[in-house]
Length: 124
Image (cartoon, rainbow, N blue to C red; front, side):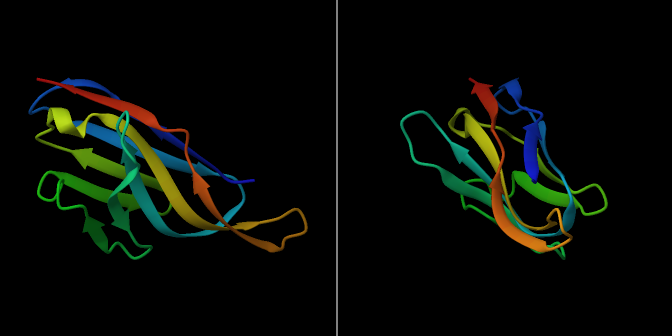
């Protein structure tokens, strides 16, 4: 069983910065695409950033130039460096990843996993 755990959320003043982390654990063979999503109260979940296994990235227009996604494949961890934060960035941020894991009989198990989310609050 593979798990994703987000951390690093908190409260920050407008214009400040935060670094979010998403750590994957379990019998992981390979992690392919990893994504950051966010969901504000009363709104639908939206894709914030994507990073492929070889480091190619993509961002939502609303965060381009302010957020940077990266990953450490050796640590099975993805990061989101958030700069110049705005009140509209306030949301629960979720980690998502396409993972190929090893089952109890050393078989490959493909899955799309989600973390529990971490709260980011930006005050004005």
